[in-house]
Length: 97
Image (cartoon, rainbow, N blue to C red; front, top):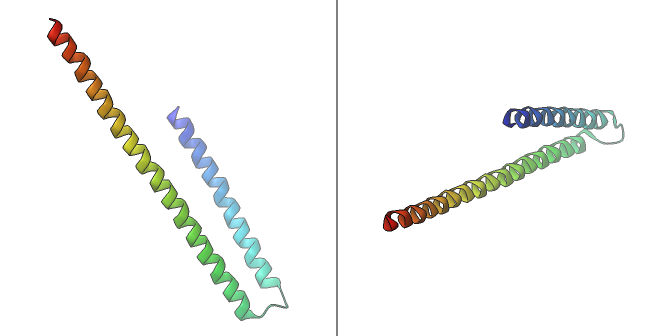
């Protein structure tokens, strides 16, 4: 089941990557082909788009790291609760015997 999800995720990432490359290509072509916009303005727009992309990548990474941290904390708490429950149940058997 895990291998299925892993390959499915890689396929989704691949299609998203292709979409991003096509979007950047079309944007670059539109900036290149626009005759009424001066070169300085085109460069300013290009830099703005690159910085926006960096900000979005950082935002997504931050959210992903936050989710991983929450998952890790949840697993530690579940393991601790399971150990405490096992000790309590095991302690009951020792006292009864």
